[in-house]
Structure formats: structure tokens, C-alpha cells
Length: 216
Ligand code: MN
Image (cartoon, helix red, strand yellow):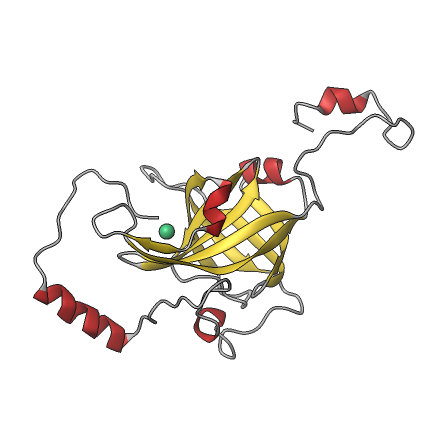
């Protein structure tokens, strides 16, 4: 155990002594998770897991899939404050991540191993108890390519009773809206893209800010 309380715990038998074990993220303990659907310059889903007092975050371009064969790219991004899990609204144009954010799913996640250790090692296995997502999931870090600024991970559904083949069901299409409000984000499709392209042609060229990091 690599925790700062390891020595303290080694010396004690908590089944016998009334002393506290000390709270810490551990296997089997429920923590909060949120998935925010974010219509930035490109629509994506921000997958966030509470761990160590912050929200560990990944941007998933296609969103989660219930099909274990559909491994979804999840770009690791910076930690967000816990309060961010409640954020829904519109980030003004010209600002970082401009666009609408809705809470697409939320609930608790239950790590199957030691979550801090597994996060560092790049392989998290957990159960989701959300309003939309349930059952077992894995987040696994891919081998880093040289010069890659952000880590690429994969979000994968485990094979269990909650899994469904992509040909039968696409959860991001079937359940597109917020779980906390009536907010919606217009679906992306050939028709929506055409409308957006027309709107872009009508407006002036967007302001360019050199050196800004990729949106997440
Ligand atoms: Mn985002």
C-alpha cells in the first residue's frame, strides 16, 4: 500500500481496536461521477470521476458505448474541481470551451481495486451506478507516442448484463438530454452540420487565439 497511512494501519488491527482506520479512497467505496455533454467547437462528452478531492477528467469524442467491442477514445485532460460536476450552462463565445454544457449522466462509481494506485498505473476498473450508465467499465491508458501532449485512454464497457451490441442500441443517440434539467443539445448529423456551416459562412471569420490549448 503506497498510502501515507500505510504505517499507521500496519501497526493496528481495526477489527479489534476502536481507533479509526482513516478515510481514504479505497476499493468498494462509492464516489461521484458525472458525464457532461459539451457542444464546444466539436461535440464531446467529458467523463469525470471523483478521486482524491478532485474530478479526474477525460474528453470522450464519441461518448460512451454499451458495446464492449466499441472501445471509445478518451483523452485525458486536466483535473476539475468537485463543484464542476453540477455545472450546466453556456460558456460564452470567445472563451475556452465556448458552447453549451449539460449533465448527461451522474451517479456513483465503485472502484474494483485501489483507485489511486490504479489511476497512476493507467488501468481503472469500476462499476457505474448512474441514471443512464450501469455495470462494469474499464478505463485504460494506451501506450504514449512520442511528442504526444495528452494521454490517450480507452473507455470500454465490460461484458455483463448491462452490455448491448452497438447495432441494436446507441445510448448517446437514444438518451441525448440532461438528467437534471430540460436542457438539450441539438443533435449532430448531416442536416445539423449543413445548418451550422451556413451559419458560419454568414458570420465573420472567428477570432484566432494562438497558443491556446486544445479544447476539452
Ligand atoms: Mn469539454
